[in-house]
Length: 151
Image (tube, rainbow, N blue to C red; front, side):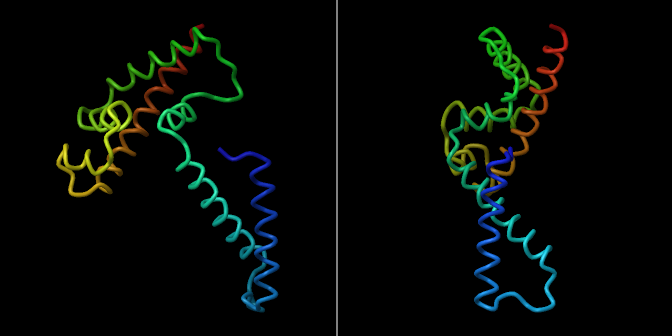
């Protein structure tokens, strides 16, 4: 999730890169400056969030998608959210559920998952894990929304 401080940092870095590219004559005279700067910002943002995501633990990855930082939850609500996550996991198709179990709960690597479940490569298993994870988060958030509307 982007925040104001990250945006300021990315924009500042982009201005410096633009300046350096002008000095090194990498910017063509007919270039659209706005588009060029936007492209630099987008590349910096992708790199920033890719690096941040790599540094997250598996638990942090799940928590960041399930919990809204702007809403404070008490212990009871947190316990209920975890129950809802377990319920949502049951709604995932069996192979997707197994991938998530192997990766998040049994700490298998993607290559081990590919071998265990018969995927052609770890990249194919990673794609399947991503799809199952998205489905899991979608289902968990549906259940979460219903829960919070009911209290």
